Image 1 (tube, rainbow, N blue to C red):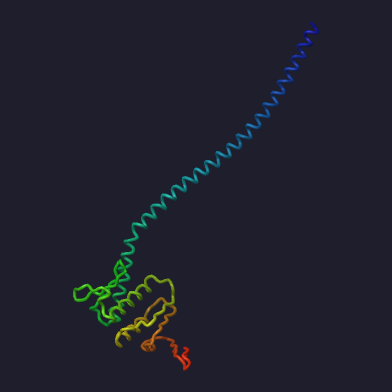
Image 2: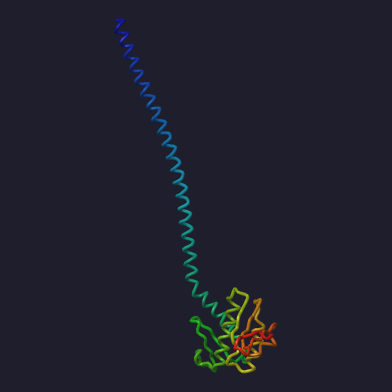
Length: 214
């Protein structure tokens, strides 16, 4: 009986050792599972954050798409209104330079210049030399005032094809332009000298080279 009991005790001890080893293995496996769970929780949190960011970006994309489409749809109307404003200013410049407020000049959405007169529509090619030059200058002056971000303007031979009265009127109009720190007029015409603050005369010397006289 003693031997039987001792054998049972040894068997029980062996089983206990085996179970303890299994328990230790289970504890180790449990630790691994807990680490995996922690990693998965971190991934889940990151995924949730990415999903929220994705939703925010989707909303931003929707708003951006709406704004872009709105601007695209409004573009032609904005262009139309801006051209009308520039055309109106150009017409005022044209009338002042020509000293005739019965004449008109228009600048349309195709960027073409025309000069209606006596109920007839005249395109740019039908204008006289002086009218065409004045109309082109009037549109440029209107563009400068309405759209230019620079504060320096250059005018190269602006009085070509104009009679003395209109040259004087143009010189006066250019001198009145506001919003520019400097206006530079390059011309063979001395009409501007009375309205310009500083005059530089350039002439050719006997060797054919240009030189500053004053």
